[in-house]
Image (cartoon, rainbow, N blue to C red; front, side, top):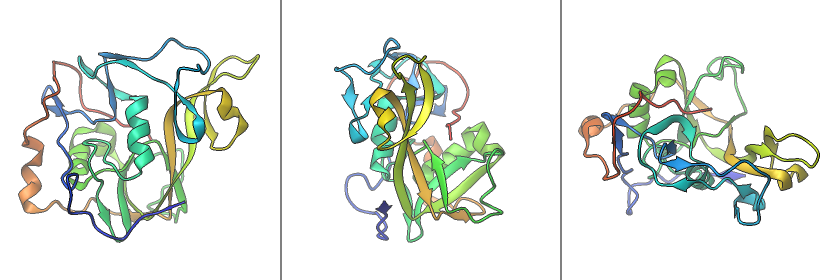
Length: 238
């Protein structure tokens, strides 16, 4: 289990979350894949695969983040890096927003599961890392799913509990699955997403307001990564 510190970050080189690259004027979260990047040929785990949490072999993409963003696709390597930290913003890669109640998560509401705004959930599973406050407001403006209906959570306890990816069991057809950590079938998996369990979340009615000086953040200078023409706003997977 990961018990988050109650200290509020505010010093050091990552105290300000970097602005993401933009594409047709829209912010592109760091976690997303681009058309300039490509997955490997389908197949079982290889000896050359990188190893992740608990030695799970991980899908390793080639290429560079350029071209057009794939708005609904997490890049496996960046998702692994951001989620494994448990404290980095999925949009800019800097420190996520933290209060004494926990780290900030912004998730699409899932009609297939009980609504934590009307129940008292003890845990929620997600493949989305947390967010800094500035980029949470940005995401709510630009992501259609989040703008329609979303959950605003402060999470005091975060635990990496499973891996999503393709399982190549001997004699069976490959299947996309979520497998809990320490399960023997992880030996046959090529991982694509770490899954965290958000424990004892505090559900907020809305995002905390931005400090007044930060309200122009959406027009901040972008990074130097290329941003050629392409599609509409991102929609993170839950």
